[in-house]
Amino acid sequence: MKENTIAAAIREGKTALGIELGSTRIKAVLVDEEHNPIASGSHDWENRYVDGIWTYSIPDIWEGVQDSYRKMAEDVKMRYGETLTTIGAICFSAMMHGYMAFDKEGDILVPFRTWRNTMTEEASEKLTRLFSYHIPQRWSIAHLYQAILNKEEHVSRIDYLITLEGYVHWKLTGKRVLGIGDCAGMFPVDSSTKDFYERMTVQFDELIASEGLPWKLRDILPTVLTAGEAAGTLTGEGAALLDVSGNLKPGIPLCPPEGDAGTGMTATNSVARRTGNVSAGTSVFAMVVLEKELSRVYPEIDLVTTPAGDSVAMVHCNNCTSDLNAWVSLFEEFAGAMGMKTDKNSLFSALYQKALEGDKDCGGLLSYGYLSGEHITHFEEGRPLFVRTPESRFNLANFMRVHLYTALGALKTGMDILFEEDVRLDVLLGHGGLFKTKGVGQRIMAAAMGVPVSVMETAGEGGAWGAALLASYMIWKQDGEALDHYLAEKVFKAEAGTRMEPDPEDEIGFAAFMERYRTGLSIERAAVDSLNC
Image (cartoon, rainbow, N blue to C red):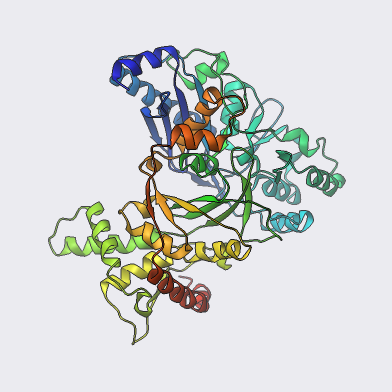
């Protein structure tokens, strides 16, 4: 669109806005009717470790939301000369899971407990046995039950339990609702009914009956909504809270707020069955849309849904590129000591490309990038580790290749469970820092998973753009049009991306590395047990 056309669309509210609260950045993206980003704004923030809890304060949340919106509105003014007063629709997204409990007055009862907190092991294990359904430690229901087990005083005063984006949505609209994708990160969701599992809610109420609490689980959970459903409108108070300048008018429709996994699926066009997406950066997770339910419970696999409510298997690993990045920083430090100025992006590119010159099996080298624990391979703590034998072919190419391989070792372990369950994938959509150097991370991922991997230019727009797409779907879809059809035909039709098939020799080499990786886990265990300083 030309600038004058975009300016007219802004005046007429023919736009959609997505705001996502990520772990280190809050980003706002405004899109036009062709789903192109036309303005954006962002705000950096960090979680705090307070009294043993990873948290963000309520003032932190609103300062960040308001700042990202303000910068986006300023971008609109600078680019198009328009003061933003209305928007076609808005969607909020945020880090999934966690625990935000409020009383009847709308005040938070305990500091926000984010997904990063791993204090709910007892509750997680007991609920998994009770439901015969894997309940990860970061899920809201695990936090709630652990608080009950711990006899925390605030539990009896809970009036509403919600996740981060659901909280923001509630304060702006007055609606206690949440998108089904993040509802599935609060409590198990039944994809056939598009609601919380009724059997399990009854089981939970029976489990805690002796506590004499004044609420039933359904009383304090949000209403489950799927993509495209109306989720309320911006109130006068909400408009003033979001836009402190007072320019934004109330009455703007909001779509169901969704978790970052749901907006990531949307932003990569991976909401249809037999598709999946993998986000590879500091951590790595893969989301695979299932054709059928898994045959049994796997503690390594989380079950969530797409924003439309289809079942998704999620393999989430704590470690991916952090140790690899540390090695690149070491090479940067060496270059500096030699009096050479290096650009970090160029250094990454050169070292990643060098990895492709290495032996397919990394020449017998082995490493583990476990900066933290890794539940997929059953480690409560991590120790970054590099190991070789006297016969290993130790050179720079193999060194870089093994660190790229091991970044995907835990993910491969989890994905193999799905492949053994006869889960089929037509394509994986890749996004994140691992794919920044063109063709390298993509090639390694294809070899590791044995499926084609596509990388789209638009994937770099991130979850805020995915949230904007969900907002646009609500207001611009045709009657009865499914989300996967809308994305495929109206958003991504001209965006094929770069597709890479797995190289058979790379696959054989990665398989040989994985044999070494699995056998060598005893070395990692010895490091965890022995190195405590």
